[in-house]
Amino acid sequence: MIYPIVVYGDPVLKKKAANIEKGTDLSQLVEDMFETMKGAHGIGLAAPQIGKSIRLFIVDGRPLEDEETNDFVKVFVNPEIIEEFGEEWAFEEGCLSIPNIREEVERPERLKIKYYDENWEYHEEEYDGMKARIIQHEYDHIEGVLFTDYLTPLKKRMLKGKLTNITKGKMKVEYRVAIPVKK
Image (cartoon, rainbow, N blue to C red; front, side):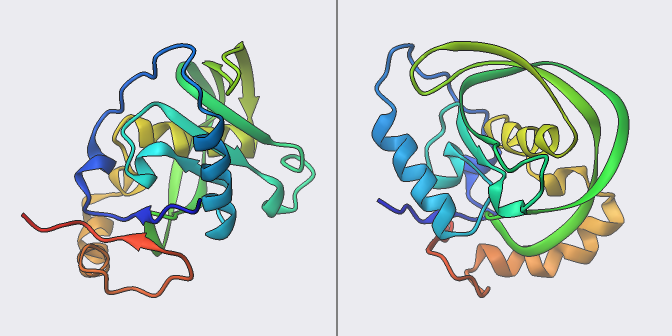
C-alpha cells in the first residue's frame, strides 16, 4: 500500500516519536514504506512522514547511483545515535515532506548508531559520508526535527512563503500528499 506523504506543517513531523514494542510484526508496514518511498522517488522515509509517530525509518541509497550507496538498503527500528564525529560537511538536502525545497545543511561526517532491524536483530554500526547523512536526516524525523530547522533565520524568512504554500497544499508533486488539517 502506498501511503500519502505528510507535508510540512503537520504536527506529527515536529513530535518526538515513540519506541516500538520489541517483537512487533513490522513486515507489512516496512513493505508499504518501501513502496511509498519508491513511488515518491525518495532515498529515505521515516514513519512520521506517513503519519505514524513511531521510531522507524528506512533507507535505500540505490537511486543515488553512487558506488558508496548502491547496496545501502536498511530498516532502522528504535534507533539511537550513540555518537556523531568528524568534520562537518555541507550538502544540499531535500525532503519528501518539504517538496521542491533544497538547502545546504552541515552535518558531522561520521556516526555510530544502535538499532534493531525489521526482524528484531540488534545492530551497532558506524557509517560515514552519504550513508551517515541519509541516516542523520531520517533520524531527525523521529526526533521531530526537519532539515529546515538547521537553516539560518535569514534563510527561514526567505523560505517562509514557500513553506506556507506547502501547508496549504499549493505545490506540485508526483506523489500523494497529506495536507495538514487546520484546527
